[in-house]
Image (tube, rainbow, N blue to C red; front, side):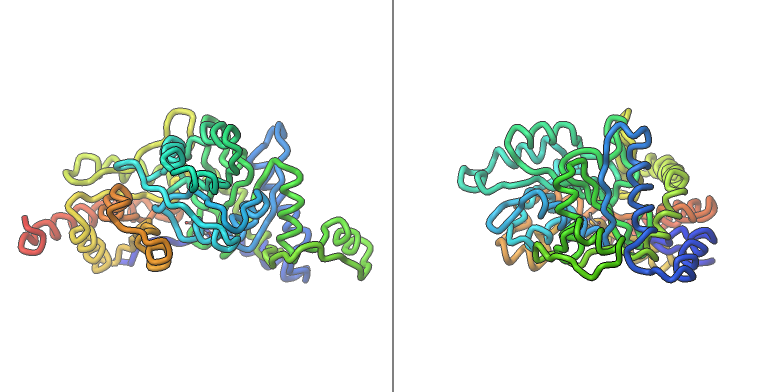
Length: 402
Ligand SMILES: Cc1ncc(COP(=O)(O)O)c(C=O)c1O
């Protein structure tokens, strides 16, 4: 039987034609396709035009986060609250700016670090630390939304910035409103495994015109955008560098792929949801397995990840992953909490006992394949292999103590 990889991007002939079209036209760096992708993305998030969204295409989700935090005014010495249970990008961007991430533990058994948890973590800080907090950076883990309305209210009242990490959250809705329309800026990722793929790539979205201008400028070397636009249109040689900016622009090759993928983004999500339903139906009755939470009414889950929890401790979970790998079923773990990573652990003196709930989730979590091109037959096979492998590793009583 064929191997089932953990992920495979859904690429069709339209995507290939779109990319080849750019190559034929010959303008390969940031240009008309990027503009179209940005406009298409804004229209996708706010189709009725009720809200003006500024979308800025960049070369990674990490760049999008960095630009968002920088435009929100995060600077050296500041603290930014973010989960420990996330990818390093969510925290490293604070370090780029000379600020420090303040890692927050999960609630017991909850993958998403929500509004109440951030608020409690903030309120638990002593005066000295609390004064340093400049922003909160929540993560819509797996595609399930954080309660952004509540966090917006809190951040406004406390004078804090709010930049959300939506690397997993396309499309995700909170109370009927798409993620991307809350807070000061939202960062999306189009990395190879994400729900929309441009190979590498990202988009930062804001409703704030001044922040948009800042991010557009910082995206391209700190070049004054007005002058640059005039230069481009009139083909003059003059431009002005007004900041020490970054080189974060997206190429038209990537944008053409993104625009083509965007046409199928809802169909992609529907398929991932169907796969999640099939998994949860099959795994819910199995003792020791905990299926991931569904979206609350009015919310939309992107189902970027299917994080299954396996009771029995880390050794059993690891053995399950190894057994599935032997059967050529790709899996992953999201995430190794940041407090365990040598950089954060050593730099901030973090201990596992300070993050008991992230620790518990880490010991149990296994991410299963969930992507549009997975056939019904493959879904059935993943289900069968998970249940069967679990029985095999559990029966190994000598290693796991019965
Ligand atoms: C939660 C989270 N944030 C940020 C990123 C960074 O995105 P990118 O790889 O596009 O820089 C990722 C994954 O790659 C992620 O999983």
